[in-house]
Length: 171
Image (cartoon, rainbow, N blue to C red; front, side):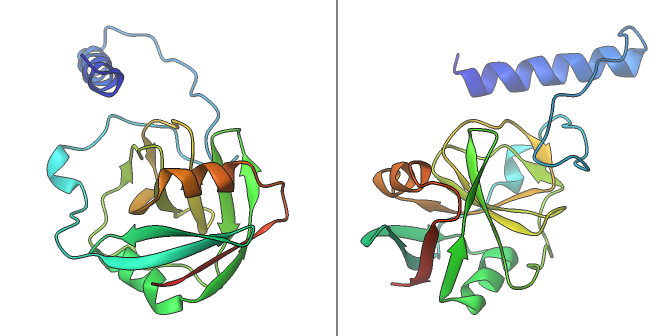
């Protein structure tokens, strides 16, 4: 059983215990921001974004270009409409890099939250930031998965110091 499936099974079991009133409240782990909602059980798989029609983009990191793809969702299309973007990134929690966007992205049709994969690109709604996931963050309300970056590109982003620039543009 993969770690992800085991985590979902445990989350579902914990949800049943809480619903039955058999569990004591637990303190929530630190999240993506101080004002972030506590994580909840992940949604059903039908809410996962599709890659049947996606937008090819390029991330330029430290002078090197890496391929990326944006999902066919309203949130990802809204990001694509803002390209090209020169983003200033900083590390958050040793598992992701975040970058403010010029304006918030639409979340029309987006699920309440997500459990992004390593190498995913996401939008964190409460803070209005683009997120490069290079570590496992688990499920959080407010995360919208919007695409993927080439694994080598994500490693390059991970290794950048705070204040570095990443350029995103259509391929």
